[in-house]
Length: 261
Image (tube, rainbow, N blue to C red; front, side, top):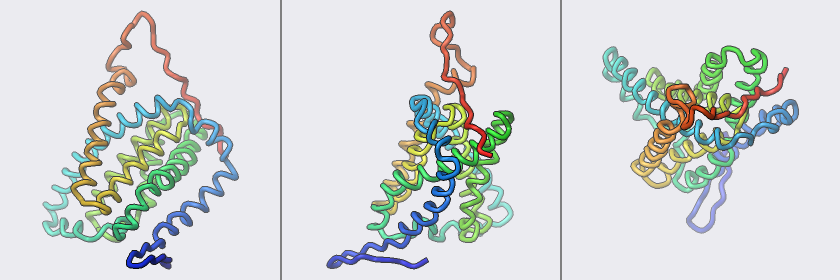
């Protein structure tokens, strides 16, 4: 990929990675928007409150699940190949940018990367699968779309080899959290887009400042998510009754995206 740069005195910002994101995402977004944009946007910002509380709660819970699974996978890898952990010392192909570019990528992650990936993978792919199945087997479809989301990050396999399983675990759990949020909120994309975008932004924050600050930002997100999970998820999945059982709480109806075929 070519790299375009702008120099001012002693400061040089290389825009190649940023332009690359815009090109790679721009074409599929344009095609999907022309064909199915009306259907996707009609529900993209509905039930924002549900999308926020369920999205953060699911993010918190599944991030913890992802951490435990990663520890188990790492233990298995080290059992068979003690040197496998050395593969993780290689530079992250996405985060291997100068600090000045990382600062630019923070807002790009929130305003472009998160929204576009959620628009494509939750709105178009997961929404399309839900439409074709008429909402049946939605958990299985959430898993399928999450695996598809992780698979487009195949460059991690090239970089980290067998150790890339750890990365794919976190990608799948993130995708699963956002897919369930999309379904529970009736097709909302805004909530998952913001959560996804901020999550990605914390990684670039670690490059722009320090690894410790980036990790601390992600921990804050995780603990906030766990708080939302404790408050809202038990009632949603039927583990806790509504505050006043005599007056049932009516949750918004889950409207599946219209058939995208």
